[in-house]
Image (cartoon, rainbow, N blue to C red; front, side):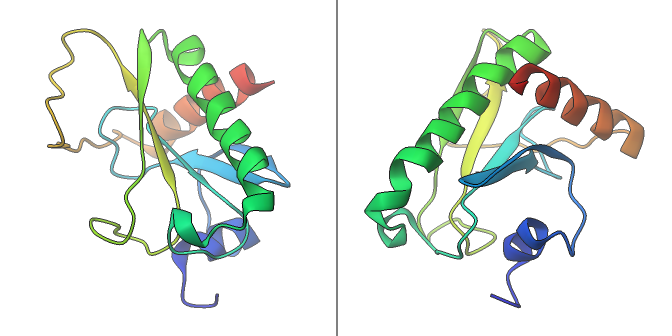
Length: 137
């Protein structure tokens, strides 16, 4: 899909801080993270929402989401993750994506209000991407 930002990231025509790249999808850092190390996991084909993803692609895609959800706490010293997906409503990019957000008890995240933060530099952003990529093996 030529107008889709995430399709352009998948194609490599738009840069992103990738943490994983597989036939089932890719994971990259959210540029407006809830917490640093917040990863978006997208399937390779352009689909807008979960109900559009072919059933044959579900196992590979969700295995990738699960791998990222395992790697993020290991890489960042978090206690766990928050994994979420919006379908149409609240999707800033209309391409299916799962949010994998590092969590630590007392981090201040409440309900579905997602305050956003920023990385201080491209170097800091890359360091988070590298740590998660290393944990993914």
